[in-house]
Length: 434
Image 1 (cartoon, helix red, strand yellow):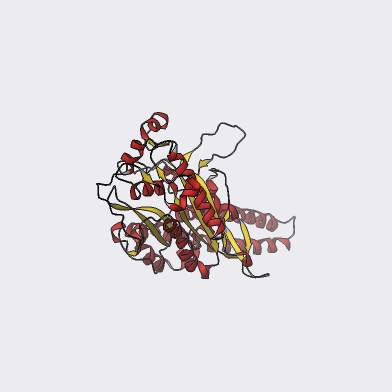
Image 2 (cartoon, rainbow, N blue to C red):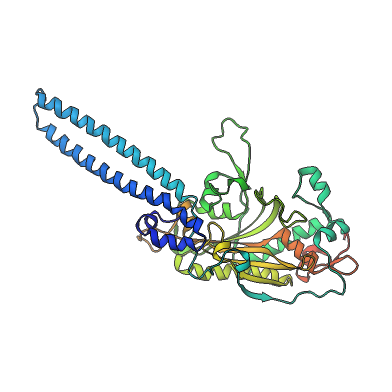
């Protein structure tokens, strides 16, 4: 969430920053600016009424309680009290509308975020490795997997509908091996603390990281069956939500920062509005596994922390020998809570395209303000909002796709990346039992 003082005191500066995303985004400020003016008027009126009431109360204290003057002052004081209550109630209504308005305004892009309208304007930062060469026509994973018997989309549709997959035998082992490999790398070499959070979260947690209220249509919400439960729960769309909110409403010791967490979770997304795109295969699923990285740090180090976090995600791809590139998301392609984002895109030869496999973002103090996550720089110092960062380290299903397509062989088998052989206990996938 943006700082209300920035909205009310420097609206033109804020408008210019949000216009880098789009003019439609900047226009979200218009009703807030009007509400800001109404807020100032109502505050002034409340303060004037409070002062008048206090003066009237003092004057009444000196009047004869049996006199007509006292009765008149008492009625006047009562009327002032009612006016003040009405003004305070109006102020509460205005501030609630301001809060609702702020909740749907995205973060301000960082100055170094490139300007642009969409993904076609995302500049490539660097490319790692070489494209694999084939002396045959490479196939897409949606052909390779079923042919090997390790991916079954038809039975998944029978069980759950479209945008699900059943992974069988070596396919299931490959998914599990990747999860273990990623967690081992991030905990043993990159210094993250592993967390196994709940997979169901409250709306307050989703509000804290920015999924609510704007993106409720993309979430799966559980139906309340317990009459004693006073809140509904959502299936987590990403481990970013529980990991970031671990410290909601807390003040951390500045000496403890940065805090680094990693977690494996299944993720659930309804993909509202995306029907018709990526309908084949596993690119865009309602349920998928992901290893997430979250870092909490002091504001002055968040740019360096973004580079660190992104390099940790890149290291997974490098260890697996997967050809990829890093792109810097432009302002028109930036996520709601992010001020700067790097996407890692793996090369998929069966689709002749780079596709996102990780998105690493610096959210500044945007999420920290929503979730009330602060730190104390030194003992006795006033608490400050910290900065939050998150990234996929990696999306497991998409890593499976990249391995199947980049390591495919002419006979339809798939070589196992050397780094995964100890986890898979196999060097090649030739079928369900391999």
